[in-house]
Length: 177
Image 1 (cartoon, helix red, strand yellow):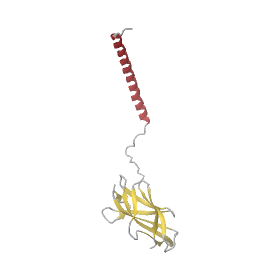
Image 2: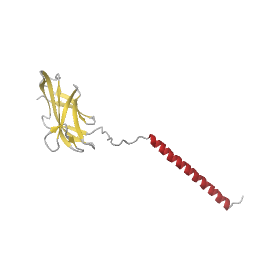
Image 3: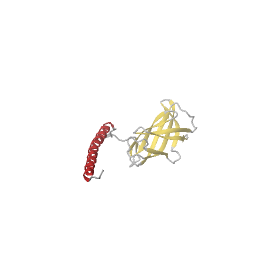
Image 4: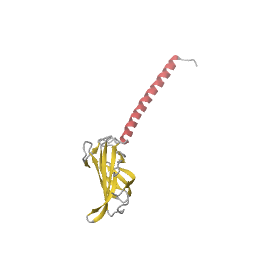
């Protein structure tokens, strides 16, 4: 069978036509498939922030009486007052508010306040700015007391941020003052 140039041109035209038709069909199917799958893909939430799991680093203040406890009273009942001073650094991309403190054992909820960056006023309303550092003070009242006067007290404490994260410091030793 001799080579016919006209037959080759017709064959090439047919192949190009078929490929063009297939490309159009599959292109349309591809776009339709992407559209259908986009309907079921998770949408980014507008106006909602990403909740960080770790917002701060805590360090006990390097002073002699930064952590202490003393016997006090609640009403006419004895109670342990447990107090600590910490340095706090905000490592998140948001401003951080300190909401409170927790004592692991015995279970107790306490207060935590932060020093304002421009004064020596402590409050729960002060924000620790992104990348900022501040001083923090926490305190607990434990009733009934779990130590006798004069004995040291060892405990794990957590500082809680506005996202509900608990930042734990373990094995802190509180001497009796």
